[in-house]
Length: 382
Ligand code: CMC
Image (cartoon, rainbow, N blue to C red; front, side):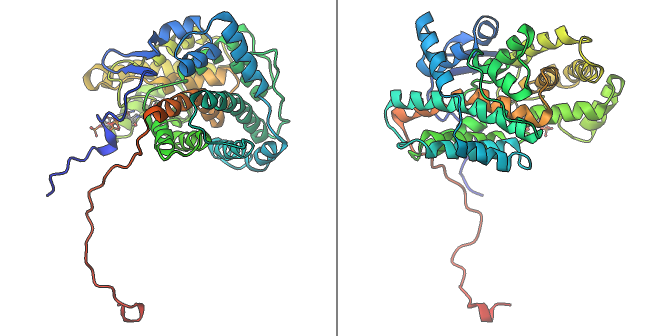
């Protein structure tokens, strides 16, 4: 037995000081740069939230206009990046194509690494703008449809939804996609942000760090949970089957995707906001989406009874997101593109902050293998 304390999954370990985001897991509260998520979701816009996260202040009107203009100028993609998307997107997972295209974006930057904060903020703006265009182009290519060029009369998230679905969203959907982007913009040192930080701690450039974030986002325990949750709802099929499905899953020690969180031991405030939107569309969409909404709302009640207060396992942001994406015309295999397009600002802000006092991540592991084995030449091995 060794005396080393192993922090499995780095649970409970603080890795840095940060002023970007506070997740209060006990109270179920979330703040970006001090502003609570409820206010931001209701009163702000994604572009304003990006400014807030990157510059650590709410913009004045003129500052926001200039910021939005910069984002718009950076929306287009080079022919080479579009080629990569066209060649890969149909068969690859959306995040595989996204990170490949992101690597290609860095090739157009003559100096991908900079130690200068303001230069890196400009790079971040470029990355945020282009990620949305890449994500939408991946979605179009996957569906065998023409890639749609950005429309600069539309705001960032609205333009993303337009480029992805081919339809200019009405007021309700414009607000909803913007709220989705705001809720996914940042979430402290979650797995993908940590992935980005590990990459940047080597003084790799910001593009490499974002690629690491995108790679880490992929799995069903993190960014893939919304798709997994909606797939589960689809396999439940009918609201009347929900209770039986959940009880059998829990009895078989299966996890219900979209529930539970490493930090939140109370209701995820982002999920609370989304539930209100779900309540509004309950019964007001096409039959198959209405069913998903009913299943989601039924499952939420049952899971809270089974595991909520007793085990601290509550719905997280990914549980209600799926039916809402479907309501906006976004298919499950595309959910990750919304998450990664929104979260890019969080990754970039953390990288820029971390570089102010960079320290290489290099944890230890407790070696459990043997040592000093005798090397036997290959002819003599049995
Ligand atoms: N359904 C049923 N049981 C659960 C669930 C769930 N969704 N989540 C946790 N548990 C149980 C788990 O089985 C374990 O039970 P026991 O102690 O009896 O073995 C206990 O709770 C602890 O679970 P854990 O997975 O060891 O704890 P964690 O802190 O690593 O969990 C989590 C965090 C997000 C990985 C986990 O809750 C989970 O796998 N949830 C489903 C996937 C999901 O929704 N992920 C999205 C997270 S929020 C968005 C994001 O940040 O990406």
